[in-house]
Every structure is written in structure tokens, then in C-alpha cells.
Length: 326
Image 1 (cartoon, rainbow, N blue to C red):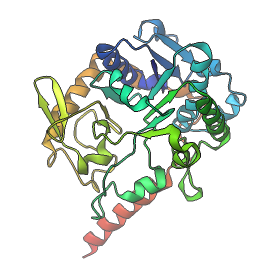
Image 2 (cartoon, helix red, strand yellow; image 1 turned 120 degrees about the vertical axis):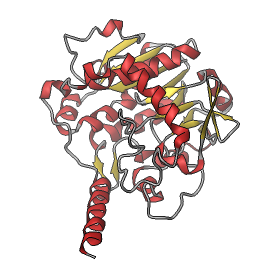
Image 3 (cartoon, rainbow, N blue to C red; image 1 turned 180 degrees about the horizontal axis):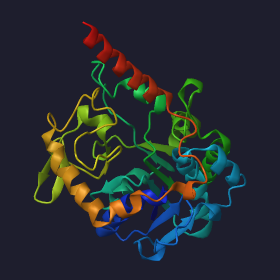
């Protein structure tokens, strides 16, 4: 098996934390797909990856159009299906795992073996149980807008199903990997609402809470540490945590703390986990990479702002205005 991630230069320390966490626990090679221009100041061969692959090496027919018409998030995610195809073509690995760079793995990837008995595609859902209907962030509308499954993780087994699936996915990512929620587009992820319908028995959904824990499913998952091992809900192992929207100052758990259901004040069980991740990032010189411009500033960072977040921010401002006016 092999794992890979995708990021631009400024996210490399996060990708290094991911790679080191995988290699510490299993003999799994980790590739980095670089969604950026190679920077002469970065020693790519010494970053800890088995291979660093530039986006241009993926042989995407309209890659120049993608650079010019996708923002940084859109471009990074649009490479995903093509990276799967490329790795299948240059290696003989039967199992290929994608992880977002802001994930840390806490158990060996061999633990995924049980999910491959009859499947060709393995996915993790955002949530496993109803979210409180309390008008806090995140609500279930987040998943209705952004997708049932979180594509911070995807597993594929070499097969005819995987080949057909990747062809279908790549056709969509080549020119519709955009953030436009009013039109039903959310980068690479929203398409996966259809995957269990199209590929049926070949899809395995992981219902274990220890896979892909993140701020969006905190209502159903708690953390505790026993010696050096993290557990979910008292006795389930934490396999990987998705540190999406990570705040280096450890002040917020999600992008919109004013609207958030949880904070470190009411979730002190998460502080140790987040402090540990912060230490990892700093050990890989996070601040050294933070200022590197995406493609040297040749292409815009944002072209299609996520309308849900714009509406959420506007709603919060309106609530504050109402409070002040009372």
C-alpha cells in the first residue's frame, strides 16, 4: 500500500507531520503531490517523502486552464483523482490512500485491512449521528451543502471499478472543481454523494468514530489519553484526527468561533491533542514556509468564495447588530 497527500508550498510542514505520523506506525511510503511551483529554497528531497511529484507530472490535459481558473483550494482538490490515476500507472500498489495534509495518523494503516474484504472504494462520513438542532456551527446544513463524506480521506483498491470511478471523477474535476454552493458545486467533495449510488457494493463506508475525527463531529466524539494512546468515547482507538482550520494559538476549534457549538473552554479534552499537533508543526518549521506565495503570485488564491461561509458571517454580523440595537 501507499499513501499520498496534496498541498502547496506553504502547507508542507503539515504534510510532513502527516507523513511522519504514518511512517512512525507502518512501513508505508508517502508521496507528496505539489500543487505549486517548485521553490528553489526548499530541499524537496529532504522533506521526508518517498517521492515529490509536481502537478505537471500528472499529465492533466487542461492543467494550465485549471491554474488560471481555480483558486488554491480548488486547484489542490482538483488534482486528487488525477494523482490516484498517476500513482496507479507508475506503481504496482494495490491499495492507495489519500489524506489531507492537515491530518495526523495515530494508528497503523494496516488497521484498514478489515474494510477491504469486498470493497474497492473506502470513505468516511462527516458525522455518524444527528447534530443538535441548536442553530450553532456546524449544523447539518453544512453537510447538505458540502457533501455527506469528507474527502480528507479516500481509499482505493486497484480494480476495474477504481479505473471507471476515477475516469468519472476526473471528468468532473477537470473543469467543475469549484466552490459555488448555489449551483451545487463544492470542489471535489460534493460529487461523492453519488458514489454509493453509482458504485453500490464496491463502496465501504467506515462507521467507526476513530476514523476522521474533526471539529464537525465533536458532538458525538470525545477524546482521552492513556499514556501515549488517544481514545475516542472512552474505549475506541483514535486512528486519525483531521485538524481542519487549525489555529496555531489554540484559541478556536472551527472557522467561526462566534457561532461554534464547542470551544476549548467546554471541550478541554481536546487541548492536549491540539497542543501536541502544534508542537509537531513547529518542529517542521511551519513559520518558515508560511510566507511562500502560491505559484509566486502568478495565480489568484480565491476565485470562487464559498457562499455558505459568506452567508454565515453575514448572519453573525446581523445578530450582533440586533443585540446592539436593543
